[in-house]
Image 1 (tube, rainbow, N blue to C red):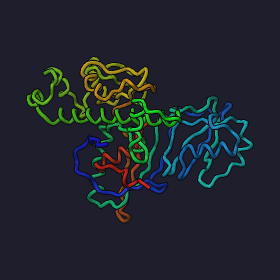
Image 2 (cartoon, rainbow, N blue to C red):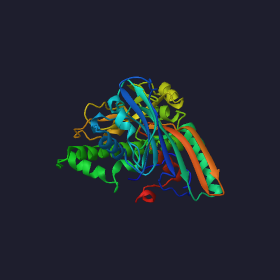
Image 3 (cartoon, rainbow, N blue to C red):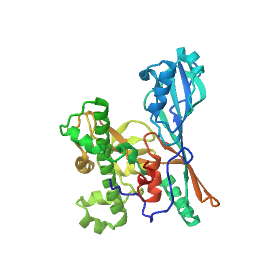
Image 4 (cartoon, rainbow, N blue to C red):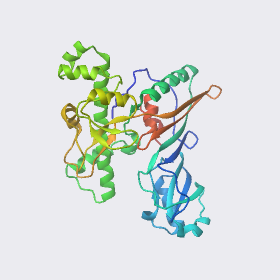
Length: 362
């Protein structure tokens, strides 16, 4: 899909293909493990395997059912990734015999609880860009400073939409009545459709925010069909991405959702990284925005969806951002942390101002 970038710089040239040498991900647990309990906590390094393939290898060699292995999230296949899994301590003896050429157990500890999906703080990334000229390296330096300070739109990455990028079309067809035998696949396609609608909504909000930042109040009255007092309220916000009356925000980087009533006060908290607005993943039992925010949101809602929905952060801030240019190799290496659910490739595409999917198709 076409996606509106947050920043306005010209495209920056570099080559990126996701491999274990150019893309490393390390999971950051939500909390420290206690060191005692019924569950073995394995820090696992895998290479060129999906998380499912890795879990299957443990299942087959240890004799443990897949559903009994705990994990916090899925990690990329074409990468070197570190993540935590949990298994019952009764498999300790079998674990000593575990061997796989693409999997290494880096560390083992214990904890009282099984690791649950979503129980992670986020991920640390190491990424190597190639064919980078010195002039482009300086541009990347500047973009990283801005993203570190102002944050970035929390779009879903191309990985969410399948190899051809069109899983959301099947999801929409299922919502409209198309039948698929496999329940898991059907849910996957509908989830892609939910993500597609979120991305469309977020792109619209980025567009409105850029308009509000680019024009004077008098001009905005003619451009936008908003009340004058709301235009003034939006225009006066310090952050480029604007909070709208009726938005549903969430304490950042985790916390409860709440409706934005006092836009002036909450916009200051947003600029201070204390809260972030959320966007709709349409579905059952999911709160909708109100007022003007809902007027925008409803164009990207589909109340026919029978899967559960959610509210997703619209805006996130990369942390611990470091960039290093290696002129001899024409490499630019960057390290950063992102909260769970955010895509490193979205940050890269914000830098590049172009889609990276074609470069990473096998």
